[in-house]
Every structure is written in C-alpha cells, then in structure tokens.
Length: 360
Image (tube, rainbow, N blue to C red; front, side, top):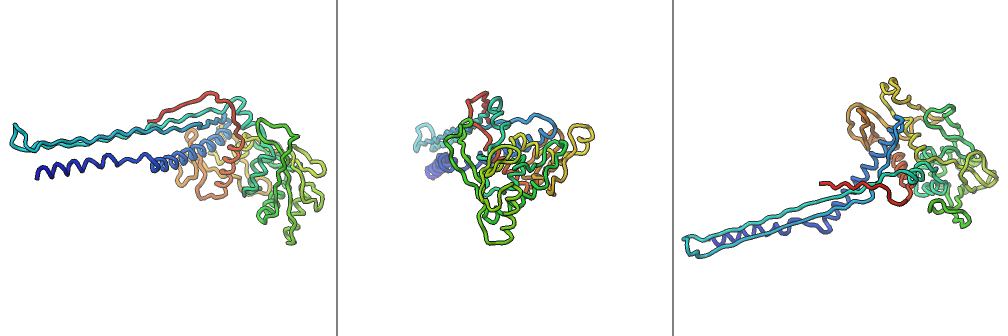
C-alpha cells in the first residue's frame, strides 16, 4: 500500500516536466503581445509629440529597432524508495519535483536626430509618395487636409494661427469633389517610373498622374468638371501630371505643395482642446476653430485633469490628460493616417546612438 502511494507521488510530479511550452504557443503569445505593445507605444508617442508642438515644446522621436525575448526553463523530478530498509521497520519513501521559468526581454531604441531627423520630419513628402496612398483606399480629403499645403494655387489652412491662415474656400470645395469621385471609383492615380529623374536619398522617383474616369452619370460628370476647373485643367483633359511646387502648373500639369511631418503635426496641434487656464497663462495659444467650410478638426483631441475612460489613445503632459475618444471613428481614421505618414517619412540611415534596456 505504501509503495502504491509513493508511486502516485512520483507520477504527480511528472507533469512538471511538460507544463511549460516554449514552442509555437509561446511564439504566438509573444508576437501578438509585443506587436500590440509597440502599436500602443507608437500611438502614445505620436499624440505626445502633437501636444508638445502645441506647447512650443520640441517633439522627440525614438524608434524601437530590436526586441529580443529570451527564455530559460529548468525542471527536475527526483524520487527514491526502499522496500525493506535494514535499520527501520517501515518502508522509506521520498519524492519531489521543481520547475523554474525565467523570461528576459531586451528592447533596443534609437533616437531619430541629425540628418535622419531632417530627412524624415523636415523634408516635405513627395507627391509620388503621398498620392499612391489614395489607391489603398485612404480618404483623399483627409489625406490632403493633413499632407498638402496647396493644390495648384489653392491654399490649405496654415498652422499656428498665422495671418491669412484660413486658406482658400475653393481648396476645401476641391477636396469634397475629389472625395465624391473617389467614392464613385472615378479617381485614379497612375505611376510612371522615370529613369531620368535622380534618386532622392535612396527613394525611387517617378512621375505621378491624376486621372478622372469618364461617367454617364450627370451628377458625377458635373462634379468631375468642377474638380477640373478648380485644378486649372482643360475641360475633358482627363489626366494631368502632378508635380511638387506652389502656384499654378503648366498646361498638362498641376502643382501640389506637400507638407513635412512637422507641418502635419503643427496642423493637428493648433486644433487641440487645451485648458483655458493654459491659454490665459501664456503656456500656449488659443485653439483654431472651424477651417474654411470644415466644421470639425481633422482629429479631435480632448483634454482633462482626470484620466479618461474609453480612450483610443491617451497621454499625460504635465498635469493634463489628452486623448482621442474611442467612439470618434473619423478622428481614429485620421490619426491612423498620420501614423502611416510618419512611417512613410522615415528614412534608413547608419545607426547612431542606441539605447538598450533589459527588462525584468
């Protein structure tokens, strides 16, 4: 009977050898977990930099270049017994098991500064980089409100409440028409590789064309004709080349003056809902209200002295919480486009200062 009890004790310890799984199951958990954590950190950093710009504070960018998760598993099971010990009248039984699991993740960060900062955040986005995003389904009106300062002489609003910053009403009418045509499937972007164009910091260059497809719908035909007029296109021209620059383009061309990523952040910053006390004290300027015919900011950022609930992303700056409401779908879409533009603007360069932080 005692031997049976001992064998049961040994068998109870054996599962310790298999209760930890470091294979595919662990990979699945960590891949999803780290991906979610990196995404949340990127969103908070983006919002924090928008708030920093609003308070005339220097934005700071830090890239996560490497994530290493190391594991160590130690297990052991011991046991022994004597059926008829010489010195004792009873049977000697013993058994035991141990298991130890250790996780040691290491994160490597690289500050974005110097030439890389200038190329990524001060250099304007090229039309050949910006316009193809329309083909992926990004709303052209949101994309242009964020990344375009002027389209063939029609001015978008300027940041930081500059004189004459309201922009041209026709610019926003143009965005409305382009969005209608995009939804109807009549707006097309065509890329053409050009070997005669010099490379720009390793980025592939090419000609980009904006085209309107023909339609038999009278309402859509009128919308396309109005968009052509606003862009300075000849009636029925259908397709024009888009080049970088201000003013009005030559025949067969339209100009688009794009913004840098700092310009995009500034545009978002001026419409943040900041505490009235911060404006009164001179810490920041008053928020910009309606822009042109638009009746809401591109991204609505709320502020409060208490930590918000149901936030899509939130960050604390000083004693104030800033956040985007998780139920504000339009703001979430625009904020996601901002993050896409940030990734698009980043350039590769030789590693500079690297910060490695072991965790745990």
